[in-house]
Image 1 (cartoon, helix red, strand yellow):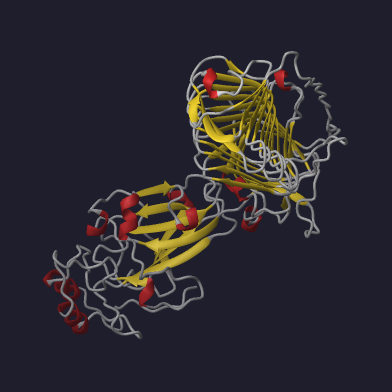
Image 2: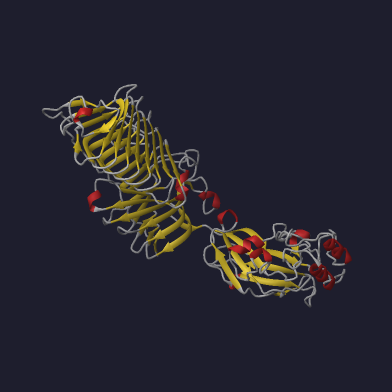
Length: 612
């Protein structure tokens, strides 16, 4: 990755006005026909008041009936379903082809389309929920919907549910057009492709009255769904966006999409309403040289802190470059997305991916990220900053490796989570030790986990220091010597607390000296990403049951407690049992022998220290 700090002239946002002249004059010899049947095929003349609709005619489906499309090349000029108040109808596209210039579903009444196959091609526009009383619904499971433009809720209510198939709008697909409309698009499969995709439409045309403010929602309920824009994606002030983890949206700019300004636009002031962006990977692909995609910086600039990634318009990932070409992004701040924030706005990205030859121009704005994959991109700072979020320790755990609770498996893997002791916690500097900070296992301290949020790399044993206290190790209470070396260090991404990465250190059995404290230091290295060392302690007092708060003596009292709490395969001991010293899920004579052979007194016992 090349970082270029030179100040370049900021490219001015180009405004390309696309003028479309559509002549909607009724053709000569036009026919008007009304659907009469309850359920039947479009091609059956007897189901219409004036024969089957003609390619130059108008068809009305308002009697509550269902029209089935099963034949190829079914045509009309206009199609109206649910025209008047109280009227309604359904189009059932099973196979074949339907073609119109204008398709109005739910004008003042209720209209519906259910598509299981075939093609529905609309030369000019498809409109759902046209007037305020109109309700239009479209369900597509398979097949194709090919339109010039689509307005999901013009002034009324419109719903689209896509579980498969392809919906393609050459020019524009708007969810929620005028402020009084309510539009919802839910996609769980298939492909949604549009030249421009608007959720709560805001017009850039001074002659168009649409100013946003509609109740418009885009729901992505399955990451397998594909959403592609030929240039422009816009979230208006009333937009809502819900998305599952792994959702992707691709902005693809090509020579055939020059009518669409590449832009990830955001007018919203409500990061909760657009909470789906936290699960969104935005992929920018450009086949047109020097045509960067604008990306709105919308978050409060809090600096490189975790809070900046929470409810702050943070993207899960931004990827420059993909299947269709290089990636070029120019950050911009065209809208005040945080009106109550007095500082600057910035872009927060969980994962930043720079493709080979890609260009990211910060243009003076700040970008904060958690992880970076650089395949040969260039970053133009131009007065801005690109800063990685520091890592932080989110959790510390001791576990009984190679025990009954991880399947007697000495390897580091997910089974070790079952062997963590929830009754134990790390002793931190400045704290005074209690029974919660040391274990009694005869195998010693042989497994430690550290959960790291925003782990930068893959830690190795060199990123840690393991030391043991001097008492019973040939030194004084405050003397620490080198401890056991981990036999393995493994990382399981997302397995830790709150989705952090879990780093597991495994040590040889019985190598930890009894009645000692083990001090673990996690170093601030490029692998860990910590800003400062993280230090914690666990103690070992084999055979101790925690019967006295004031000391850790192992004596006859501990053996009596073991005798009084037997467990076997019919009633196994839990992982946190203080009486199961060999962690075989049983408490029996073997555990009493362990306590007997590891007796301690005020000289040889583990000391309840205040950690330095």
